[in-house]
Image (cartoon, rainbow over all chains, first blue to last red; front, side, top):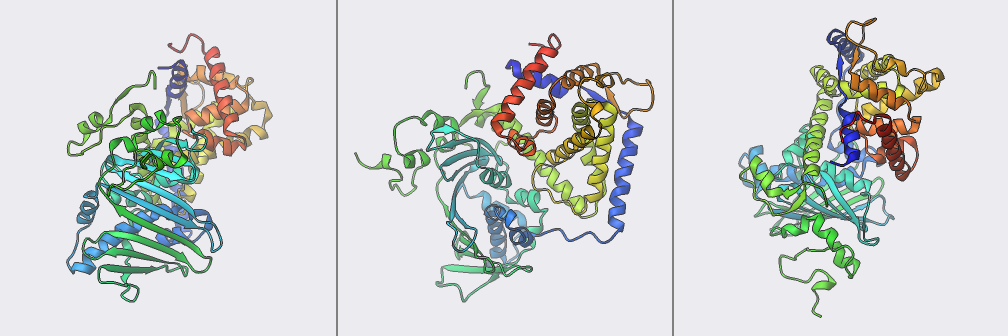
Length: 299
Length: 222
């Protein structure tokens, strides 16, 4: 352990105790304050998905993470709407756990004339994730950023705060248990959302489209999915009042090689000559065998 | 990463969940363990706040038990006064309980409470300049079972030493060291709170630790 860690641990772990009777007295005061606040009137309704998404511009970055939660809702609904049978929530989770890897490209536009901001996210088994936001390539696990690199500056950097928040909200344990994400973010509220099938918007038999409408704003969400596999492939969130839009494209493929999620391996290649594109998508393999970066092109 | 404990992550996780197939990937285990802990803390906090929003008063006890000691350490160190620290923490907890039904958690609960404590300590110190570092350090570490009036916070000898050393730090360094170590705030969060740059916070943190090390010379095992 480094000397700095010694002093940190000494300070952090310096023991204290508290008097039990006085501790209980403080807790009683807290209970009184809590009860008094409750007796003043009914507890306000906890904000749900739509509140979170549309009530304030300041929380809109959350939308990017909520896209994934909407997918969960979608799969749950598909189970019922497409097959007519009841699908237990555990089945829904199992469905997602069978996905070894997915990639999402998210475009977020604050208003009609704003330049879209793109987020790219790859998630693999074991809670590994990799994200690209602007020049940053971010590695994380279990919803926590472990490393962030800037492909322009070719150095490790402080992570983009919006990306960090998104990663945090996408925290999942070993499997893609979205139930845990839902619990951690909304206490299960999101499962109450019931998108309705919109047959007018579907352009082909293979594609099903679901719409859900905000109860508190003109905003709506549209989810595109494949009829046979029931996998969601696209999502649009649209707020007609302010022109706020999110478009997301989801693809499922074979898992990327382990090195793709390895920040140490990425760091060792940081200073090698090559384009920013090559670095941003370093170790990424196209499942169909196509070239991804200039490095893949024939010499 | 020289000196860091590095093992295949697949070995570590496979002990926990045998069915999980993992890619072979080498990462810093200390980081992963810290992240796992932080993850579970974060999830539990969201559920606790959710329960409080719904009127479940039993969640109060868990929040209190979970963060009481670190907030007391923080408040006592920031104010260099154990008694004032007790008052600050009690006030922060009671205010939190009063607003818990409508409280919305947007980050870390501990970070939120720690920031409340830090704001209250700053206000208290502004209101009473006499409590500034150095003069009132006698109140740190001198509280023991059965001594004097009833005390909520009972300091150990080690915490007394730490408290006296903290009191010798300039206030801005003390804030950074205590908020980082006791409040688990990141340097970015502290920089926002102090309205300064991250680099300044990081360098003040280093200076603060170096000063503590020299003040506590001989107490910290190398």
